[in-house]
Length: 169
Image (cartoon, rainbow, N blue to C red):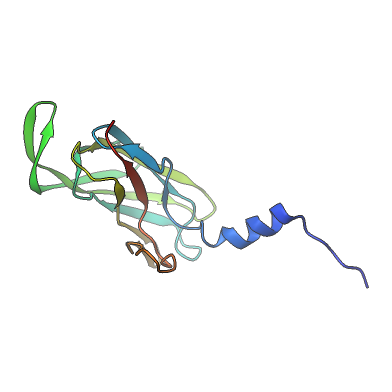
């Protein structure tokens, strides 16, 4: 009988692959009061089915959001009022983009892609994490990456992508 011993790095990669199989943000930290390019990494479809729609809810405190068009996809933007007015380069900004949807494209399960938007982290955001809930619709099925992690609890099965807001310097 022959035993196979896997290197520790391989074992770690296998153990964490399920945890990393969700939509994530490329950059995990940003400073309050700075611009932020949110790159949503989509590593797979819904249980083998191609992704056809991505909807991102913009969190409070992320202002002046602008999506990047994605070739072959339609772009829909929902605007609304913010919970409060934010300073935006010396002006008060009390409304803006609250939701962005890319639809009509086709991202097969075997491929990876990124969907991008840019905006600003309000200068008065406290040092904490903010989350961008994402709904991923596929030809068959839906994955809702909308759960907000809670301190002291295990990571949710379907976590929303998040960014750690660092204090303004």
